[in-house]
Image 1 (cartoon, one colour):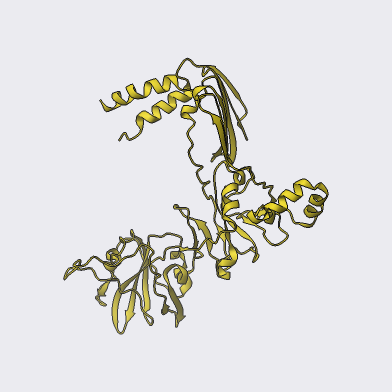
Image 2: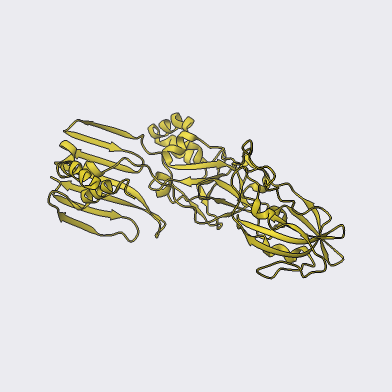
Length: 412
């Protein structure tokens, strides 16, 4: 019933409105980060599912993954030190009155001096914010030294050197290392959870210029030397995010690319405070040639180490003008529209840059419409050659898709 009422209300709009009715303002989505980048300390930089830049320790780094400093003594693995786990960003104080006699205690974990007898890895979901790690605590306890070692499930590893345990230190955020250790004559089961990746602060390069170009840059000199990309210089900038369809995306920049910065970098000409210099260069071709001869081309280095030159130019500011029901035009960094008549009924022309995940490239979709009946649609980009010319009565394909999307809004 509700769908029928919605259809009755939207049908006149869909039938009478022109092409502008389904050209929604929207916002560009970020291009996914498909790779990670090596750091000076052997770890990896990556962009997580929330779009945050994080540092993950290197595979096999027991100290970085579990906070354990192990040493070999007389063909035994001894815990030499334990680093306290970092405070969780979402952790909070337990609610008053919660817990009581049945409250779960925090895991004890390994201690310096423990002798590792057996090790096993488990995958257990992390606890809720502010709650003790009940899943890890359940793996711990005192064992009977005369009984068989009660490690259920997959067989464990009896290490003779720390290298025997490096295979457990992999990039899994829900990994738990369970150890059977000897401590003061007793046999205990203890556990250590893998540390979450370390978020890195993103100190912007130039917020206004970044917004116009459609990317987010981070200054690598704001991080400790070990957290910086292995091939980065002190003045370089790391691309953290790229908006699909933006100027930066069309120039070929991708997340975790490294831009060579410095006083002579072409990137300095794009700064907001360089507007007067850009205007002077446009007015004086001779000065422009001299300046360009003294600066270094903008170079981007991918996560794999391949370097390439990048051409970036600031787009004109977003603009929208027109006269109601007669003519309208809008232009942003990734889309344009021009229309004549009410709701673009007489004529409509638009273009929009979109990211193609399969081709890892940006395609530009263009569309012309005359009287909303004659439709000309084509795309420009790799593998996108082709032209469609259609005669659509009243409800064309694009407006029909818009109507269907509006009808389905909020449906379960």
